Image (cartoon, rainbow, N blue to C red; front, side, top):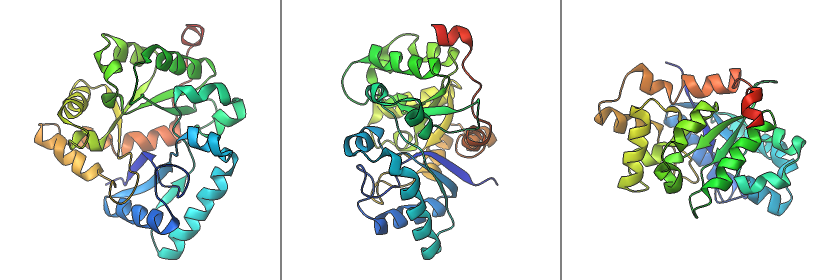
Amino acid sequence: MTARAELHFHLLPGVDDGPGDMAEAVELARLAVEDGTGIVCTTPHVRELLRQGILHEVPARVAEVRAALAKAGVPLEVIPGGEVAHEDLPALGDRELDAVAQGPPGRRWVLIEAPLFGDDLQGFLAGTAEIRRRGYGTLIGHPERCRPLMDAAGAIEEELRAGARLQVNGSSLTGLHGERQRAWAVGLVRAGHVHVMASDAHRPTRGPVLGAALAALAAEGIAGPAAEALAARNPRALLSEGLAAPSRRARAA
């Protein structure tokens, strides 16, 4: 069975609301391996990196995590990335945006978080459109936790038509964020709108949940290779194959 891959995972210590120190990061990584994960894309909040002026330090900090995991004997591959909020985009030049993107040249994509607070849906949608105009695909993080997005008729479908992919949180499927969010997450999966599932883990106390999320889907009658692909084949394909570059029509929209 293909090892699972996490594309939304706060593993870098001391940069945001993820692990407080390296020891906690190592423990979180150990839990990921126990959950069946082979690769983690670290996704610190870019707003925190910008606030602290350390976005350029991410590769070096990832290297420190790799060294700590090797010393601790934790067999987890770790790669750099970032979780972009639409409010971050004015501060991100082309070099900075590419530094937090994933995928091969010409097919790179950005993890953009659906906002958890406020009702600036138009700002968020403008942000996804801007990323595509700048030549990147979009992976929308935890749309099921964004009530304005879920309530807006046709908004999800329009993003999908524009080439976006959706990532639901495993923690939503297990009910951590409430029944409404759980039902929305299940509904998105059942409709075939979801491409990737991720833990969005922050600390050992809010750790990896891909296995538990797959069990939750199975309890809803959603199981088998297609469900497992959300946690393994699909995220790995995004890393290795990327997303098709947005069409000229989408970039001009």
